[in-house]
Image (tube, rainbow, N blue to C red; front, side, top):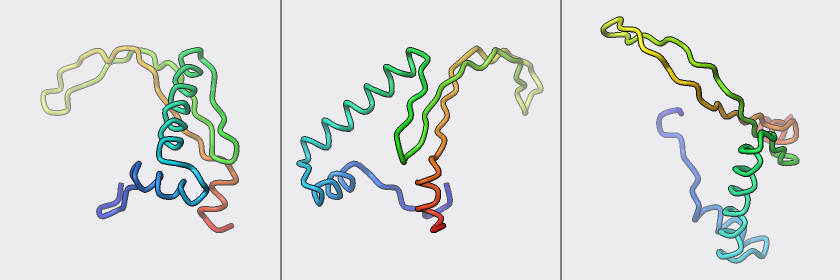
Length: 98
């Protein structure tokens, strides 16, 4: 992240959603349900496509040997899930102004 780059937060999202008629409670419930939906699908090894936003996926990364850069000592990096977010064409074009 670039130095000085602004981050959005939940209160800003809630304020933005209020312009569309959502209450803060509705926005919070929506975010909680979206997180659960994404989590449940990734646990079931199913990619999640959010239309006009992007795709969230997870894949297993095999164990591998890493090396401590200071000491040169080798160690095993355990198998783990890697998460990816791919931005949709619609979102990319709206941000880039294409």
